[in-house]
Length: 87
Image (tube, rainbow, N blue to C red; front, side, top):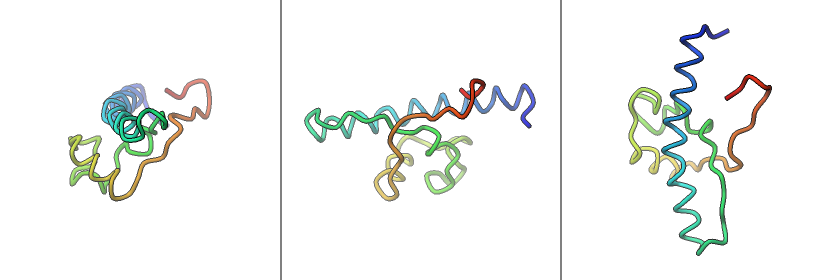
């Protein structure tokens, strides 16, 4: 179980990752001329070892995230909350 500081760190990581996946969704929308408006899962990308030599949560870049998306893909559908305390 995460302590208070662990929960805060997890929320910050996910917030940073959301900022990175938003442009991925925008690119999909633009490429499809507005037909495909999807929500990209930040959770799928967070701390992935393939998209950064350090893991995205440890300083990966948006460029590395885009390369990961192009090579591997990222789940659509946005966030899934397992319970009321998930952020």
